[in-house]
Length: 339
Image 1 (cartoon, rainbow, N blue to C red):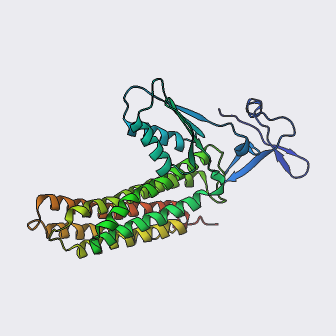
Image 2: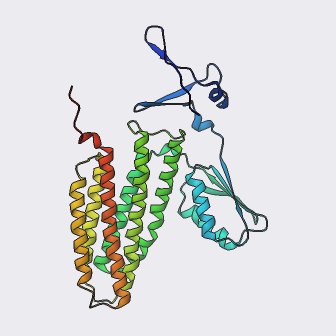
Image 3: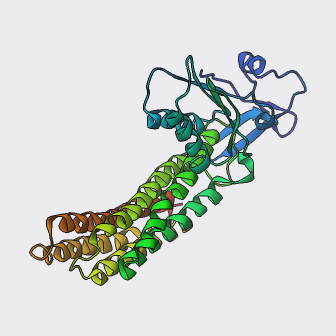
């Protein structure tokens, strides 16, 4: 609903504007009720005071019909979580199979921070979000995701360097750590977009859209780091000199670090340097792969191709991150209008 209101001037220095009656009544407000007025660049946001504390709980009901894929059920639970539902009920008119039950438990435990199963029987599973989202800001959550993804890439490079399969197995498990933080950030961003979650001073609505893209890039980078570890298992006993591959991996890690620093400082000047480095890495990737074309077995060649592709994709997604840094700091490169 869109309303047009005329600004009025009262007293010696006060500007006032009336609130739509329909909205006031819908929020349960009365004369004397307090509202919060938040500045957001050229916009202001008005919402009831203590809205986050008093908001009604949103409940999502997920009905299982027949012999459904457990992963499909898990995806619906994740969807309900990131769309700000406070309680999620999984139910069946007959019974919930052990496969679905175990998948739900693993999803809650490993992918969705701040959730607990509070009630369970053969027909229903009740999941409650108990985490207070106001305790962690969006900025803090993003910083955490930056560091976790950096650690996963670094560990993947170490797998190539040391050919240690035990490290590879641990890196594969780190995929869940990345997912946990990613899903939590998306929930926070959706809460902020709905006006429930307050954002840090200086963060605009446009910034929130950029943060959404940034979080997705980080999640994809984490996936590719895990893919490096997975495919390295197929190179055991091959004639690949993984030192060269490791060097390329660490080049990609450095590009990632540069992009993260650019985003954190809103530095728009890094993007051109990152673009050049990504192009150089891409050329090195092709040359390295070509050098092994006639020396590896087909399955090993496929594994090497996938590893090199993931290294390149990490660099390319990092380039995309540096472009987001350009968006965040665009005013620094624009010519200021003449006074």
